[in-house]
Structure formats: structure tokens, C-alpha cells
Length: 155
Figure 1 (cartoon, rainbow, N blue to C red):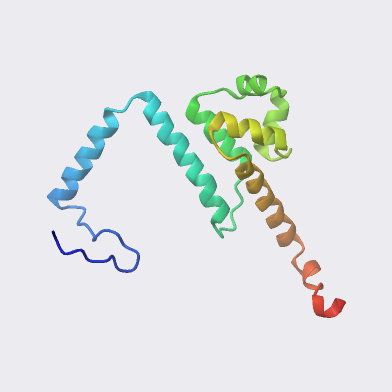
Figure 2: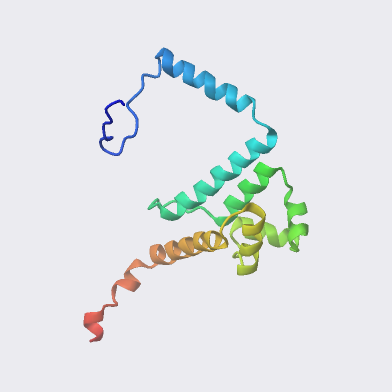
């Protein structure tokens, strides 16, 4: 058995020279593997990537706002589903779906459940993205308004 060395600084692999023959061979293996995937497998990977982006957005401290509708739009694009067809399928008017995507209209609990079922996501992820954005909007627009409140003043 080889000696096992714990990774340092959270790194699980050693740095690799991108010009090395091992790295070039590894790239070739990945490229061949991706070429042999079915369209269904490729779509599943794309959908999984969007789910990871949603989760990453929720835990990030980035000040950039990403609407839940942007993620929905990415799902529709990856699955090649037209917005009108999707709106009809979930029982919305196309104009209302467009307002959800653009952030003009919030995602309801019912729509969050439907999106969760269709795209295999947790409905709360959709609602949490929306809540995070609303919280950012409120706290960034009037930060001094909320600084006046404290328990010491109240007691």
C-alpha cells in the first residue's frame, strides 16, 4: 500500500502542468467521453450545472443579483422548451411567465412546486433565491433606516 499523504490547504490534487503529456492525455480522455454522450446525458449535465449555480448563488456573498427567472430561463434554454409552450403547460399566460422571468412578478409557492417537479429541484430553492434578492434590495436601498433599531434602546 502506498503512503497516503493528507491534502494540504484543502487541495485534493497536486498542481498539474497544463503542457504536460499527462494533462494532454487527460484532456483527450475527457473530450472522447463527452463526444460519446447521448443528448439526454448532455442535457442532464447541463441541468445539473444550473442546479449547482442556483445553490452556489444562495450561499455566495456576491452582491450581484440573479433573478430566479434567470435560472428558469436557463432551464428552458437547456431543454429547448419555448416560453409560450412552457407557460401553456403550467397554466400561465405567456405574458405572466415573461413577468416571472423578468422579475416583475414573484414566483408563487404553487409555481415553485411546479418548477421543482419539472426540473427536479427543491421548491424552496426558487423561493429562497427570490427572498435573498428581496432582502438585498431592501437592505441596500435604505441601510440607515434599519441601523436605528437595537435591543438596548428598546429595553
